[in-house]
Length: 287
Length: 63
Image (cartoon, rainbow over all chains, first blue to last red; front, side):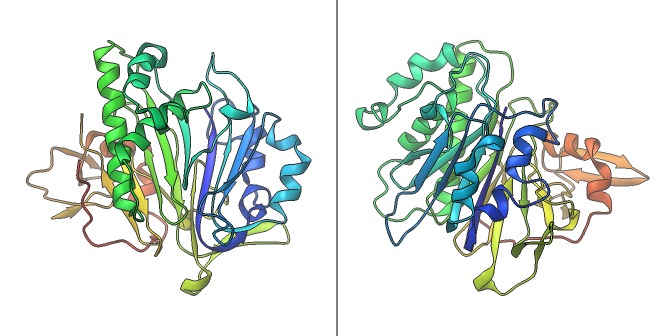
């Protein structure tokens, strides 16, 4: 399993979420609070948007643990962005540790992350790849189940030339899960899969907290209240502010101990955060 | 109509298929997942911290 976080709103330093908070993503890489195994040391990645330069996010990935990477700390302290994803990896058994297997994955203006496992992936991989058109098939660079799920999502999203909405992203995300579950059923896979996916186009963020057996507790996922995230004198928190300074965080674990600022995403619900920082949570229909 | 405390969705208590009694109160849920989540962390929902987030009006998932 892994940990991740995402942010959308007014520009902040990447360090404000990645390294500075009490339970920062870097801290979670060696002392995760909500996993039985606290280590997430199989690499990391950060993707951030600079729209004055390009619609596509910039990606920085490495196979070194996040807790041990000077470049990550330096970059995080000097990069501001209004939308970014960050991910620390605990590779599933059999999944190669390489830079191209680090999240977030990027395709055009979209970024994608996954926390979880597609059970029996090798049993559905051939049929998954056969479903992809050439332009997406050839875009898959790595070997992970996560990146292949992204490919399915992109195929279902289709060729959107206009800006997509959060609802568009959510529709395609839910259809992706449905398709993966369908293939798993056809392949006779009985073990439950865990699909905490997150996707952004640089303006909207959509994420899901899903497990295919509702009796099993899905992996943790939270979102923050809108506000300004501040780190001062070793303490961090979210404070109320005007809309122009506001932002919302999604995170596998709460970055701070102030419970009132964090809401757990309900199991098998999709969370949509649009560019106006309006959040909406909806149940994923049963498959 | 009642509110599912886990996901905050409004649901029809007459049609709600998932419910339980906790500390003498009846609670209704939109799904087995929300009911199971409530059982795991009841005090996160019964007396929660102040709510957060600006909720949208109805938004439909076309799936």
